[in-house]
Length: 118
Image (tube, rainbow, N blue to C red; front, side, top):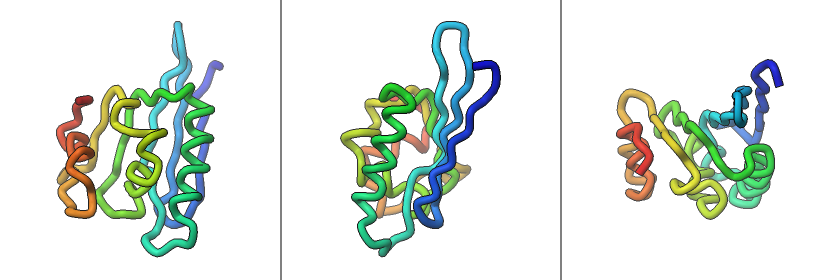
């Protein structure tokens, strides 16, 4: 691959983008946001389907996660599909200028605020 590949998942308001960059030894993958609007019908099923697609595209490894901000529609998928895209699958992460402070976000995900893989 000689250029960046961009995949957009349009699951409802929060949307997410998977960017894949070429590399000498392997591709690198960056995921921007991963959530769905609160109250969306079958939200967990939808996010898990998308997570399976992301795992297939990345081989189950994300190099960078960017959560643009802490709203549910931008981060809910990380809880809804944690077994597929949980913190152990990430090399590094960042979240906006305020980090993940919402009580809606489980504490095990708040390390993203520091921009560090655990």
